[in-house]
Length: 230
Image (cartoon, rainbow, N blue to C red; front, side):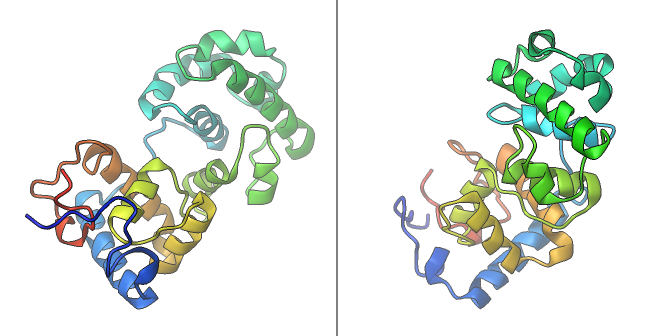
């Protein structure tokens, strides 16, 4: 079994010590494996349009996609668009999302978000990242996810799964999601950015998990700087 790389180490071929060319070569191997494992990778958040995706993504902060998907059918039936949600009071929204973490603050944000969509964007989800980030409850990651999944705008949003995988695979040691996203975008073809985000999430969610990754027969074992640690 290969020697484990100590926590926080950047290894001889990983993280910031590797050349851009070396990390691009590593990224190409990662992409090839992802395309074999998850050829149709996309978001697991259930949605029928950009508005539903935006709401679901806001709700998914510090919550699982599965918990969001259980709550949103009834929520969307009651509030099918920004115009309907903008008329609600937060306490009316709360019962629909009570099973999701931080539901009170999220209910307030969703109502204010819908009101801003109506007031400034005619009820439509803007296709501009800066305008999206002006909406309550929408940060860089949420905006990047929505633009990619709803409109095909290239971008790699970084969550806990991508952070873990980027470090284990020696792709990036950046300390902020925005910086890590920029570094990952240097490594992968632009037309693959949205796909890479979704594929790596699936890999991190179901195979390369935080505590008990399924290292046996892992197709990326040779590229993993943390191999042997479990």
